[in-house]
Image 1 (cartoon, protein in one colour):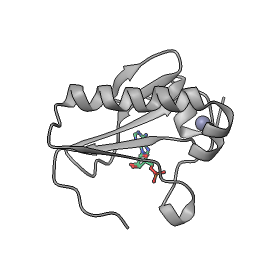
Image 2 (cartoon, protein in one colour):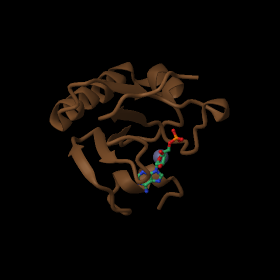
Image 3 (cartoon, protein in one colour):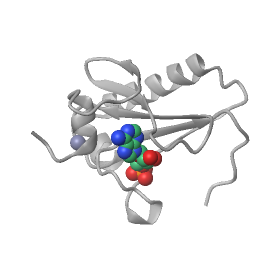
Image 4 (tube, rainbow, N blue to C red):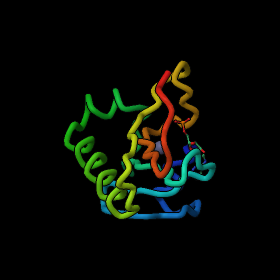
Length: 112
Ligand code: AMP
Ligand code: ZN
């Protein structure tokens, strides 16, 4: 039992629109998409944010990025895509289980 939403998704206790899954990484569609393609990539293990993850398991960051690139290929978003980690309150992080957003399928605005 966990009160972390993305741990619950990783455990299969809460359903998600899953695009890919390995023993360590999962990709699923964002429930409130901000672009035609909006997919989240998470490690199954719990880390609060990307800083904590890279400090502990940098290879797992590589697996997340590889998964994101594979998802982008599968989605056919040749026009381009963005990969981002919201980190902390100023960036608008709301779920404190690290996740990469993949955004694509339309022209994206500038950051900031
Ligand atoms: P962040 O603001 O970076 O913490 O992003 C959290 C993201 O999780 C938001 O884009 C939400 O729409 C998304 N989200 C919240 N609950 C779910 C869920 N049950 N399944 C999929 N995505 C979710
Ligand atoms: Zn978690």
